[in-house]
Image 1 (cartoon, rainbow, N blue to C red):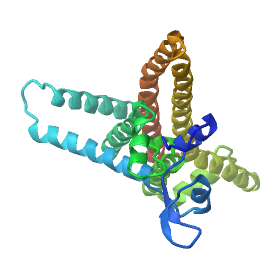
Image 2 (cartoon, rainbow, N blue to C red):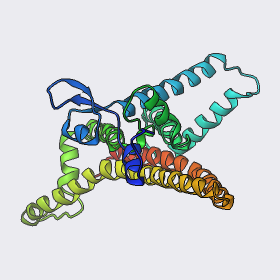
Image 3 (tube, rainbow, N blue to C red):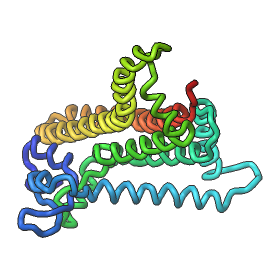
Amino acid sequence: MASETHTSTEYIKHHLQNLTFGELPDGSLGLAQTPEQAKAMGFWAINVDTVAVSLILGAIFLYFFAKIAKKATLNVPAGGQNFVEMIIEFIDDSVRGSFTGRNPLVAPLALTIFIWIFLMNLMDLVPIDYLPGLATVLGLPFLKVVPTTDPNATFGMSIAVFALVIYYSIKVKGAAGFAGELALQPFSSTNPVIKGIFIPINLFLEGVNLIAKPISLSLRLFGNMYAGEMIFILLAIMGGSFAAASMGGSSVLFGTQILLSLAWAIFHILIITLQAFIFMTLTIVYLDMAHQEHH
C-alpha cells in the first residue's frame, strides 16, 4: 500500500487504481502517478498491471499443461496428469453438452477461457496488501493484481468471442444467410409489404440481442469480481480498525475480522470458479448458435 494512503477512501482508491502507461501532461510517455493523470491519458493508455499479470498467468497455464503433456503416459494417471485429464474431461463434457456443431476450435478455446479466467480470478485470493506493498517498495505507484476487475480485460475477451461468433455466423450461413437471420426474425410474413415493415423491427431487436452478448459477457465477469475485490478491501480496512482496537485489549474484534475474511475467501473460491465456468459456457452456447442454420 502506498505510504500516503491514510484514510479509508484513499486506501480504496489506491487499491482500485491500475498502473497506467501513456502520455503524461508534459507530452512525454510514462507511468501515471495519480488517478487524475491516468484518467487524462485517455483511450490509448495501457493498464500495465492488467496486461502483465494476464500474460504471466497465461504463460504459467501453457507451461504447466505443456509439461504434463510431454510426460503423459498410458498408464494409470497420477499427480499432475490426473489433474489435467480431469479438467480436459470436464471441458469436453461441457462442449459436448452445449455445442451441437463440428468445430475443432471450440474445445481448446473453452479450455483456454476457463483456465485463464480462473487463474486471473484466483489472484483475488492473494492478501490484498502483499503485491501492492511490494510494488510500492519497487517504486511503482499502483498495482491492481486481479485482471478481471479491469473492464478493459473482460471487454477484450468478450469482444474476441464476439468476433468469432460473427465470423462463424457468416462462414456457416453465408453473408446473405446471416443478414437474413437478423432481418427476417423473429417476425415474419409471406406478405411482401408486411415483411418489409417487419425488417427494421427485426433488425433492431436482433441487433440489440447481438450486441448484448459481448456486453453482458464482459460486465457479468467484471461486476462479480470487482464486487468481490471491494469486499476484500473493506475487510482489510475493518481489520486495520480492529487491530488498532485490539491493542487496547479488544482482541475479539481482530479475531472476528480474521473469521470474516476466511469465510469470504472460502466462499469466493466458488465465485471465481463459477464466473470462469459461466464465461466458458456462454462462449460455447454463442458459438453453437453461430453454427446453427435457420430455415
